[in-house]
Image (spheres, rainbow, N blue to C red):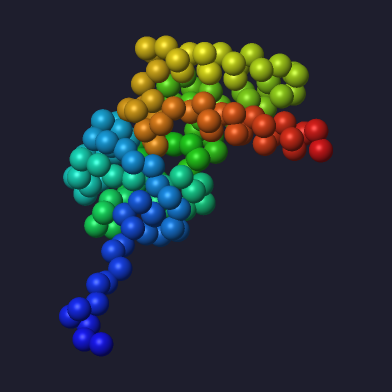
Length: 149
């Protein structure tokens, strides 16, 4: 068959070109907050955040331009395990672990409640442009399961 009539497969711009993980769409306010000017110029108004902790790519776009996590202005969860899970209110993995050790959910519950207020600016402050509640809960239940088992 003549190749002129065969449609080539479109690349999927939603998946990280390095690891293949499904990215999270972010806008310019997120990119402006997380990237230095020189790295920011590499991307357009929209990009994707790679959520895989072990992947060195933080952001990528439809042209497979990539910004590595080590170029971020500050550490970002899950690229850095020392970074807060909640960029708005600073909740860290250590604080979630403390809740588990103490048999309470005080810190976790506080962040979940605060995330519903106008003080939360997840779209800008979170590296993935999303609210942290799902990630906080996922981490909490994973760690709680590890300590119970």
